[in-house]
Image (tube, rainbow over the protein chains, first blue to last red):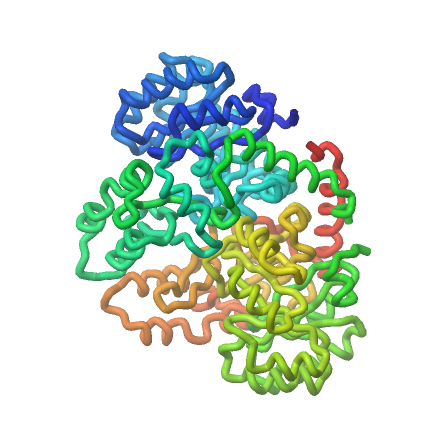
Length: 314
Length: 314
């Protein structure tokens, strides 16, 4: 067992959160991670609000440990899910893509621990003032929607800016990244990419195999021209998307239409042509499909060795 | 004194290299860093090959410790400087922006230790095969010309790919970053931005003050459309440059013409309007002008505390 303010706060054994990945993070994955001693998180972005509710209820049956729900604030179902987490007494909510201000009061009243994802010190400070119990500071090496700052420079600056605990995300998939995050001042990490390959994850096997096959430079960022940069594996789809963004004859509408549904196609159908396989730069560190518990223990054991290794003492 | 393969290899006290920043890294800065126990590096990009030669000779008078020269391989004076480092028996050469293959044989014959800057595992492997004694793996949070990979994900992957020692760069400006780099597997770090603010650095005071004033999100990447992404502080110049890149009516030639000489204007003249103040995302961590020796000792002492801190042992 590890003691940081994050493990204490969330009542978990290991300060490892599983990212609330759209379409990927369901009850199966979240409960596996929570049962393994980390914090599993269900995404609110999948087949609609009813499905989210169903996954929350399923998860409660699959684990008696704490778990969380990620609410993508720009989603049309955000209001609904914001209420479900209260009704269902979900202990932890993480938020992305905006400010949770409109929900904050009622979540805090309901005793929910709110942990926003932040990509800058200014936003971290706002979230602390608003009542967040911690922040997830996520660097641009992460998969999916990303910000401008990168992990190595972001974490220490956020740690200096707030007094609530900081969870590091972006580029972390093994004990080295975990130990590095601790040195930067974080008290926990959030991993996304490596949990896609967890045995319990219901994402299509093509997705898992693509992450395992990926090398360090096999991701690409698209969507900058649309104001929403997204990191995903280089595939025919993402290459075409990038090409359309560089083509002055394309409209943002046409590009968005082209991208519509691409994540679902990747996760559910393993569609190698039209799927958007969102993944971070840590994909190159992911070597195999294995149970969530093994993923967590390997991270922790390697980090423990590194942090105790006196030859690293200078 | 710290012992890693980097300190042993280079005969230095602390495994901290000072980046060979164009126009900034001259004999004054390099000798100060080398005298402080790190490895100072002279840039080959300033007022021409004769000036580089002069700076090398000056540096030898200012320190009897090892120092290096950075050769920007795309520079028109690369051939000349490649010969000067042999003639002047410069102990270490770092290279950027390409492959040093055409110079490698004669450098190795001359006993020069060659340390290329790399941004991917594939390139790191090529450099190791070619005879590099180490590589500097640089993430995209760095200032100046950058690659696609970010530090947190790049370092462990490069460490897995090569057996020569790895120096981490990008986003590192204090002991936390140093300690994190050690956890990721690096055996040294290279810092750029913080050394711009060294007392001994001859860069214009406006440049130093701008770095000190910068927060976490005050840098911007321009030049992607030209194939040469560069990170610099957000200023009227870089904003205009970014705007021109997004304007379909602008030609690459017009944009390059607009940018021409902008780094010199920043470093030498402190030109707030037309200068390109290249800096990394670590600018937000830099708080004051101080001697190079103080910079190095603060990094080392804080890293030492962190690496020895048993409360970080999990």
